Image (cartoon, rainbow, N blue to C red; front, side, top):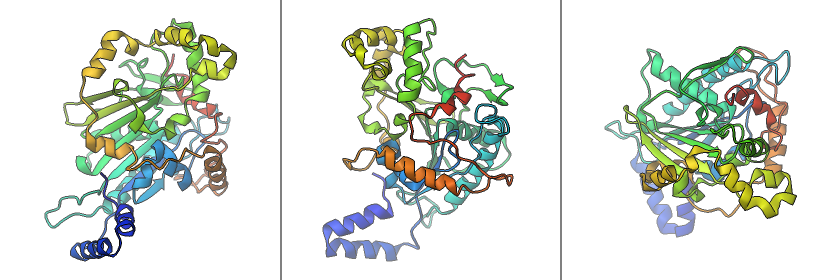
Amino acid sequence: MRVTRRAVRNSGVACGAAAATAVLAMSTATPGWGVSTAIVIGGIGTPSLHDVVMSQLLGGALRDYDQRVSVNWPAEARPYTGETDMTLGDSIEIGTANLDAQIDDALAQLERDAEGNLLDGEEVTVVGLSAGSLVVTETLREMTTDDEEDPEADALNFVVVADSSRQEIIDDTEQYNPEYDYTYRPPPQTVYDTVEVTGEYDGMADFPDRWWNLTAIQNAMAGSVSVHVPTMFSDLSEVPKQNTTVTENALGGTTVRYLVPAETLPLVQANPSLAPREAELKAQVDKGYSRNDPANVAARLAGPDVPQNIRDLVTPETDTGDEADLATASELQRDAETDAPESADGAKVRGDSDPVADADSAESAESSESSE
């Protein structure tokens, strides 16, 4: 369980004066409290995120951190977001620099004991949403290629949600899109634990790898509207084992993949009259994904469980019972973007899109090339 100042305060209230005394003793026995931080970067059209939005991500898991920090970036992808906007590549370059600075600030706040070991609960988690995941991936890539000393593996971890560059249809070759000035390439191997979260049938991040299955393609296109954004607010503790994979690379970094199940087939959600045929359609759609082959399902069931330390990063400590209030989050996000700060190059950051609306279709700028 993540030990945060908020958790300690809640324990003191619940247990009364005796617990409060214990907390006081703990606070005087250490040189000070560090800060566990969740750093979040949004997708296209989302240059900044309101704290209410961030606190509802991953089923409320980020509420367990002492602080949540939004990374400002242009979040533009010319020509899709506007003929005079930055290219996706330029936006990612600025976002990477800003994210790197936020990581340095957060790491500097971590508390250590006399031997230099991190105290319990001291950690920095970086969360990228949709196109923001591309910024996270490029930051990881820079860590592996620059000459600077990298942070310790136990101090930093990463989460990418709805990342178009990590889906099965992407092969190991580099794909450069001159229109968006961005090259899709495999993610780098690093020492850091990484969590990949994908919504089942999200056409922007879960395109069928058997592209000749037209029903699966139509379903994925519908899912790009109905699945893409809600996945960001999913409670990963509810994802079944058969929808998870755990792998460790040669450098010791663990990657956990969560496939969040769709409650309703996107085709049916878009056209409720198809509900009587949902089981039939789902069977046909699932054949468009090699992961559903019996041997692959059996391999996941026989594979390792998600390590507890990683599970703690992305699942709430307790079930709050609250559903994500997308309407409130959307309104607050629009207010935040009204006063959007300036980007790193001095240009006014614009936020024309609603990050929690179903019409998050601006993200197709970063997925159109990846699904070809």
